[in-house]
Picture 1 (cartoon, rainbow, N blue to C red):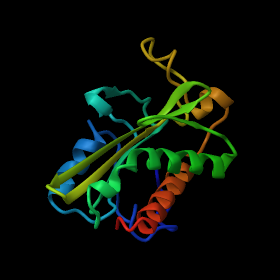
Picture 2 (cartoon, rainbow, N blue to C red):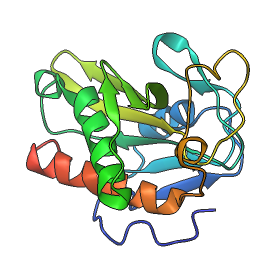
Picture 3 (cartoon, rainbow, N blue to C red):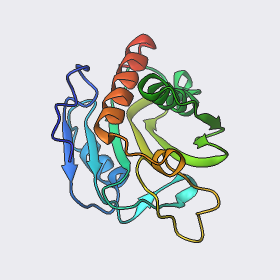
Picture 4 (tube, helix red, strand yellow):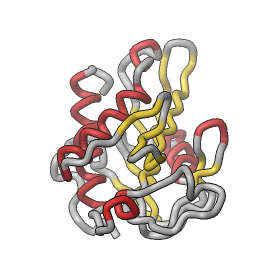
Length: 193
């Protein structure tokens, strides 16, 4: 998984990708690494997240080796106020990446859901760790359903994936690369990094 050189389009975001075959939570792991001052733009990604975290401490379920589950750390040079629209801007980056790659239009449901055909296909978790107005680091967690076709009874009415909707396989690597490229452009354009 993720053998492709994913950072060929970026200089900072995804320059350091740490892959785990299985991990409890990419968000928990990236926070541990951020406290140790891991490289700016580091991404933690897994094929199997056993205890994924969504907003309001909800669980994020994902089928093994079918979806994108990753988290990243950024050390911003901006104030907390400048990140007011961050979560919705990340949703736009994701929808733009899918549109660019496949011509598929996804919708955004505020504050942090990406929607396809009325069902949730992706979620975003942003955490700003700060001291007053000074940001120590920013954590971004993404769950995006790519090739999952089996959904548990409690979510099958509200969740979907690209493959479930369109009945074909999609490249997780291509999607990740395009999203990271979008992140880097956004962070540079908005003087966040």
